[in-house]
Length: 519
Image 1 (cartoon, one colour):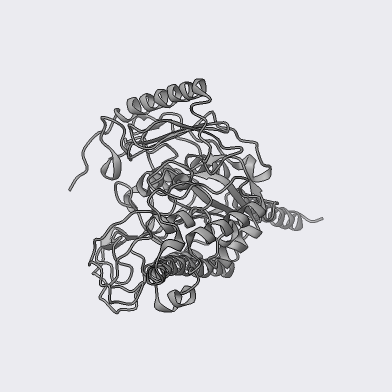
Image 2 (cartoon, rainbow, N blue to C red):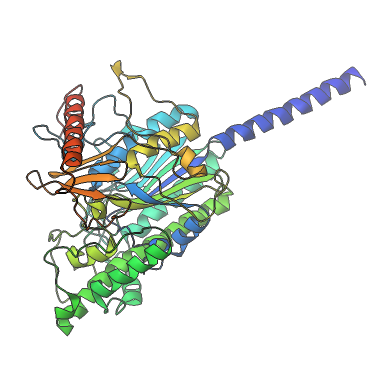
């Protein structure tokens, strides 16, 4: 072979090797899409036993995994902090501890940086669409593009929203704007731009819908689809959801007790039943619309040819809400149900259904408040199709999972401030096989509500002064059989452990960067 041909062959082989190396690098760094719902119940999605049509979520579940014991923090802002930092919200001052500041206005320590800042050194483009509710702004926390919808009181005409950290004009009434559609539009816009300008790079997209958080507002055609669907009432429909979730293998418990104060459906008048039916119809319509918009985002991934190479995580920030709140532009009782002039909440009766068969709702740390569906879809990386994963896990596990899959590493220092070890564990082994990642404990504290889980034992209390309740979740996920009086030693053991970690988190939260938020 001539020298010329030898050189040519070497060049070609070098190019092939280079292309294979690039392909291997891309395969080792999947795109990441986190889809976060707001106040969606544990069993609202069809693939979790619900009666709401969610064909796109159902397809993701059919071709991926469903986690049956995945936990959040019981409230929106601490959940977002845990998801994006990999720490319990109390560790990073994004939820209160007794005697310490924090909560929705808390400022994270310097060392508690968000996931995008960990991913950018590994070539990731980073995007945010929707709700934020984290201290700071998206672009200053590592996102390349952002649409931030801050107005939580108006789905049709929000007054406060931002693009790339720049405030946008208020949306005029009757403009055709609907928040769920607008959030998906921005996600698709970012993905198209990525395909055009950054196709050689992986992406991380945090898609945070505001629905079905109150006020219950949805397009009229979506509401019409569900009107009359809930006339059987919460008692009958909760039982049906229990039967479907048990048949699917998602739970093995009995139905949790009805929330105190919620009347039996049959005691209501026909007019009351009709009004309640209308309310749940809007909640269902909001989730139906979100599923439709998720479908549009998935279509864009297909068009880009990257759907199979994208790790998709779908979940909710807390359980369905039982809150009774009136704010924003007020409520016009004469306006069509779910329209812009209405302002109603789901309230306890329907929250009981949305979280069925689990007990309680958002803000509480009983199972209904802290349990979320988690759908994991990644055909190129997960062989399982339609399987369940019963391994208990928590939002704190998502950051270490994503870093393992993307080649990222946890920082040892940020601005010369030491970074403490994160509490979560990578769930990558669970993607291949169930019951392979064990936690020493899982811990909760929100608005005085306390809980800790060790193995299948869960200790939980409602309020700072409420008595401890003890449940064996392997048999009683619905938290119907309190074992506290029968197992006082186990109560004392778990109470001591809960207090130990509360003190540990308080010491950590009292550390660096305790500055006040700037106006």
